[in-house]
Image 1 (cartoon, rainbow, N blue to C red):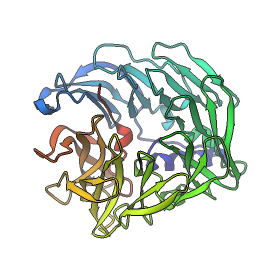
Image 2 (cartoon, one colour; image 1 turned 90 degrees about the vertical axis):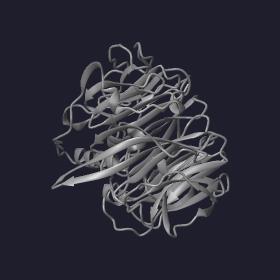
Image 3 (cartoon, rainbow, N blue to C red; image 1 turned 45 degrees about the vertical axis):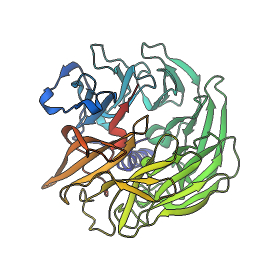
Image 4 (tube, one colour; image 1 turned 90 degrees about the horizontal axis):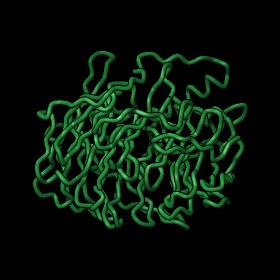
Length: 447
């Protein structure tokens, strides 16, 4: 799933399409395949401590770059047109979404994940509106604009798993696809705004193609939020109106048994960001605030099924908390936090990265930006739980043009040695109401 800034555009497109209008988007880069080229090694830092931490891919201004930490090599995999990156589960392949003419998605495009030579491929074909890698190996799944669930390996050979999914405006413009933790089922959001508002999330058996309507409610619009860590629940945000503006202020989060049943309220109000949710074992950690300004009154909650009783583990006092990410094993987590009730200026969140116990107690501060116009964002753990990757950003404004200068950094969980800058770049991601799309624009594979 994309960030809320992406979702707002998709909702707008869906609503305009439903009423017979044409939405024209200008200024978006078109897809442009290219052979891999190298960037200057002077722009990359790979001290011995990080050489075994795998491969990092990122997209900035439509350009896909791949960092091989072991070889300290950076390769440009695509020159323009990309909008998100994801490694296959085995790390052999890297897929990136593309923006085609008119601003519509056209991906994914697949390239070798090691940075070597290899032609770019589109194994799922054209008209893919949502896609995901398999939980094991390197199989791609996608939803077509005509309502079919398909799969294909990187070499090609597309197979139709299920067809005749509800072909709604939501499916075409916003329909996310997410595989269950065991990789046996796919959840598909087919909620619709037209001709009437209907929220619906289906589960599809990836072996048989059998589709089950998990939850459906007339008068509500759903946005899928993910599976529970044990695969027994589906989470989604729900509202009574198809409004991108209202969605930007947040919706309630609900959960429903994966086999179908009655949904329950999990969080009364939160923003629609995937990285504001993380599972520490069986406990869901959520960042919940009162409105679209993430640097105002955002706290950390812990909620566990099946009772779904929420407790505050880190209140919004001096700091406003966002982007929780749990370590493997679920005993600790990291989160970004900046001054609470700070002025609402895009890109001036002044956040640091903090290590906390699963119960919310602060262990240590892992980063400290040297100036207030820098902000540390989107932390995530390495596979062994010893390192944390994050992005340090400075937003630049020149008239109506905005951009950011950014650095991908790695910090030890122990706090020893300080953060290590890996690579710097310029991006068009300047934070949408104090939230960056780094979770979708950066991928990290570790063997």
